[in-house]
Length: 91
Image (cartoon, rainbow, N blue to C red; front, side, top):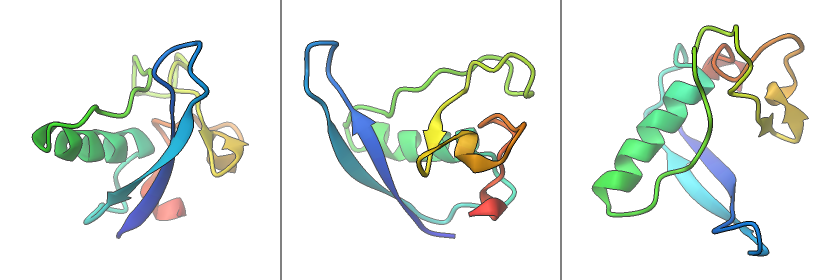
């Protein structure tokens, strides 16, 4: 699966910030949203670019550290699911 991501980037608390677009190509539908971001970040690092910053801890849906807004909804709109448990097959 191939996706186009619009990611909010902000250099620091005083920066106005901006959306930047990234391509996520060859993504497996069984990956979690965080695993997809890991794949995108690997490519960015290989290209000498700054990776997408996000928080995560347990990656088991327990701690809630990976909370994020996806497609304008908390956790991607799937109620009761954290970003680490949201699989790409839902997109």
